[in-house]
Image 1 (spheres, rainbow, N blue to C red):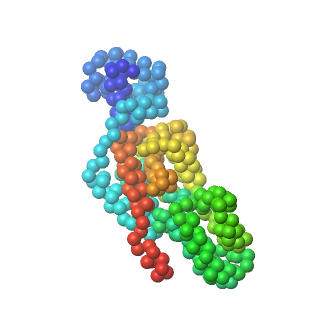
Image 2 (image 1 turned 30 degrees about the horizontal axis):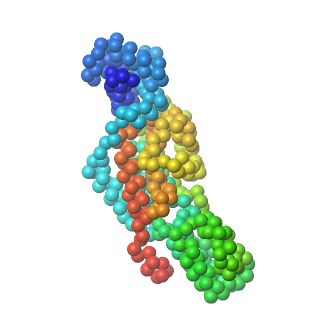
Image 3 (image 1 turned 90 degrees about the horizontal axis):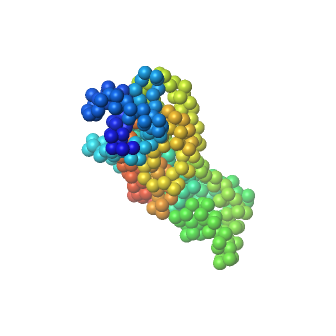
Length: 352
């Protein structure tokens, strides 16, 4: 595009994102384009030939295609600065540490929805995440309570049925071994380390085999590796002026959101990405629909592992420049809170 085409295209997209209706040459003239209507229409026709614009009706103006929106987002979009009120709102909802992180995820999805007028989405950390400490409590001769404390201070409890009675001394020995070698690792990473240790420490491996495999403790710790999703603001889908014309698409999206696995799979698209990711329409590797866009950013643990994400889902007609910093700052605070130890955690655990 030459400079004239860029200016006209940028104005068309901005007007469309504001009003949600096709933009005519007359509207562009009124907006300050210093060209005749015929010249403006000629530029619009060339942009349409190159698949940056299209006309939904014969007599209508033009609006951006998916390709056009992608070009706008990558080349022409201006990222806005968060308003002080937006910063205060996000901080008030997220900058509160709790031992149970579920309310934190719920508040984050709510604030994302409220500030964007879209669906707010938070993907909670995967359960196969680094472990800080394991404790065992003897319940009955063949039943043991395993308390697994993650590095983000969430707690997993598992009641394990043993193949044979296990003494308190054996459980304490096992806990000490695990806390020495497992701290900071996921279960899968520890199992990989265990295989490598076979050559270096036969006695430790034999001891571990007795307690972990023959007595079935670690194999019984089945974690939900899918994680959890928190979704708020579905009602926003019906607020768009064009909502009544796309009820089938809305119903399809709501059905999609009901299946947690669909959203969890978005995480795979973030593995090699940095910063806020924008999926426009069919670009979304999971939700391949032309009607919706997803703006999302992953957050990480101190070792750089992706452990969750925050984002929004809304119509392709979004104020991308306004929403990107909202998602970015929310993800930043979530990462900070998840990776900050809960100060009273150990005291409360011992009291329980």
